[in-house]
Length: 331
Image (cartoon, rainbow, N blue to C red; front, side, top):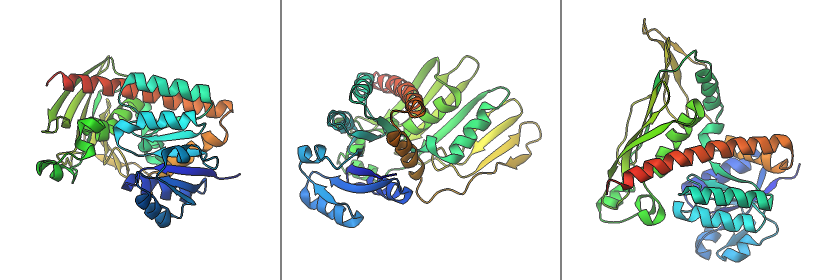
């Protein structure tokens, strides 16, 4: 099977990590990199062995030797760039958040169907084997009493904010903020494990740039609640927990999950869950999953997978939209 010829947008650490995962998977070859400056593109090309380096947007998009483009630009650019990629008959892998409004999400999916090309959100953790195993465990619980899911990690770029600067990840112009960056991970986990909630109640802490620096969201279900904690101006060492009638499932992380423990609610005795050793590159699993769909795009199995990813992504963005709207109402 021929390898997918990959183009990338962005020169950040996440782009480097995806390139390394894609190449290591042996499903892709790095064809081209794009940056706003030719100098940066050439530097990236030389570092990772790409065939071409572009600073010309149209030339990059129309290169006939690119099959799929990975988009890791600032959040606010994801939608327009993904749209351009699809219009040029290429598959699009878009870093989270793929869009920042529900209307954008619908437009991208409609365009994907029209063009016959995949567009997908790179929510890497839902493809990790340990996350999948934990999902199966949770779905086998006889009942659910709720959960508390946490992902809060201090960003070094918040130091720049404190100095009076406005880095993209904390800029409203680039759709920055904690919910769009780390909050999306816990939203994905909650909806994968428990389904779509009946109501969302969000509370956020704004920073001086105007975006949310940290927040809490309560997802209401018919018989239980799920609390989400997320932040980029603080670091939490709290583990995530899922509550059942007989056991509490304790997780060391939401992404890069490596340890899980079942605790008996009555005796407090614990039992470790057997999990795989974490990968040295957690983006490997999504790269493989996406390649399988793209290389067999017209088969019913691939279409079913893509529709499943789309359903979850749409629900995630509906919840994020609620969190953002309630955050904005506090201004």
